Length: 97
Image (cartoon, rainbow, N blue to C red; front, side):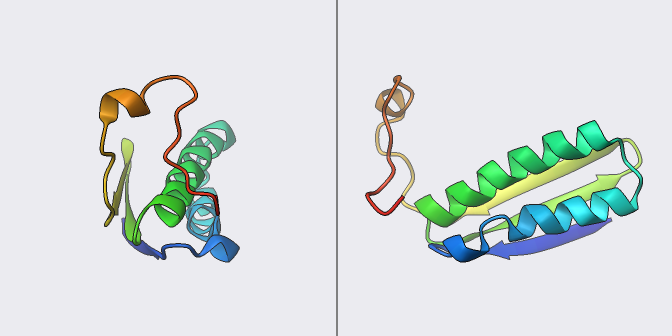
């Protein structure tokens, strides 16, 4: 089973929409609730990052009997200095975030 969901840039009013939709579909498959929670928390974090740090993107999810695969992609400026971004306390967040 494969699903694709668009994620709009700067659309904070809909943050969580995609992860909520995925949660609903995973519950319909009677997956373990702890597994669902772990997946949804990770998806929400990714979704908010796309909304706040890119020009928009997409989340794709493949649900197979033995695994769940998620691909989050975005169109954005990237991180200019990866080493600096990995340092404690550093953030690329804008003032609006």
